Amino acid sequence: MTGTSLLLLALALLCLPFADLQVSTVDPWLELGRLGLGLVSPQLPHLQTLLEALANTLAFAFQGVALGSLLGLGLATGYGRAWVRRLAAVLRAIHELFWALLFIQVLGLSPLAGVLAIALPYMGTFAKVFGEMFEEQDPGPHQALPPGTPALGRFCFVTLPQCFGSMAIYCRYRLECAIRSATVLGFIGLPTLGYHLESLLRQGYYAEAAPYCYALLALIVSLKWWLRRPLVPLYLLAAVLWLPPVASVDWALAKQFLTHDLVPAPLRGDGALWPWLASLGREELLPGLVNTLVLALLALAVTGLLTLGWFPGISRLFGNRLTRGLSHLALVLMRSTPEYLLAFIGVLLWGPSMLPAIMALALHNGGIIAHLVGHHADLLELREDAPKGLNRYFFEVLPRLYRTFLAYSLYRFETLVRETAILGMLGIPTLGFFIDSAFSEFRFDRALVLLAATALLNIAIDAAARRLRQRLHLGGRAALL
Image: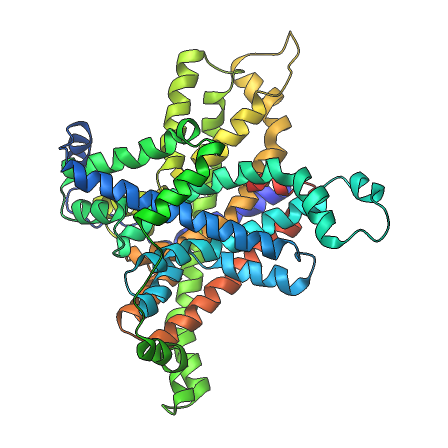
């Protein structure tokens, strides 16, 4: 494990010369002061506008998770087949924002486009998680069934009951993720909380944006109180009635988009294919891949450092009740705020370099991993004569938790790469920057090739991290939560 950690750290240090960490704003401290002043002196918007944005955000989240979980459950029943695993990997490898950009071309800025943009990648994630749950269940009840029991009966009366509790817990976690995803969809025009946040923050109206930010945080933090299992069907019904997943489709335009616009230009008779691919690879694909990996590796290193510094703050092994409460609140705020929103604020403060992206990814993912590792620390039993302070941290706690910390970090690396790509839409030259540019210029064929490269990169990272976790015996499915 030490060798793996040193290798990842060395790779991050090697990436430093290639990273753009420049601050290009005139006076970032002045802008940071204005942001802070706006957060402590919020100006309340029209109540109806705020409530409609909240309702739209929840409607997208509930419908996306419901559809994604049902489709993912269907895929999970065949997760032992290689083609099913590959399909699930492709679906979850493409970020919700990229799916939304594709669906908007056919469905417009419609509720259906937003629901599908969340549902499809979540379908791949649910298929992976549910499929692994099915594979890891106790085989005893299956062996007790009489020979010839139909497969459907086995699934409904043995497999599903064993896994249902864990599946419900994971769906709850995914809903929290979907609320963040729905918020981010507002940055490309869908009427969620993110729509108002993007508009107000870009204009420097921080006091006016603060209530929308607080509403998002309150929505996620209070999830455990208002999300009750008996109420979920009512919430879903209300979501469908409030924001029906429909769209007005121009079938002629849809056909042109699918059969003409997405086809590489050379295959439409506009030049030769290989020079076109070579130019795309040299000018956009290769720089985007390099910047995506550089940014992800640096963000992983900073995430690890923040995690190691933060997790003692919420553990009973360190500090008192007051410090644990404050640390827990800080971590909740970090992991509840979408990376895209944090990076967007960072770009406003420092300019479109890798610095705001690194800090956004590290703050959000560091908050998640520190929360998980801190709770693992509370399960440790120390000797009565165990040392205090730094000696306790370095010689008693950290050696026993480092395997868990590394497992979570390797799992989150796939997420870091996935999020790094979409941060390019903020002007940072990752793959997402070139994909967004291609969509803006209506060069959908180039966007499709770049999206395919993004998916392949995420699949490769996921496979490499999984093999590394297995080789180091770091555990698997627990890291998904």
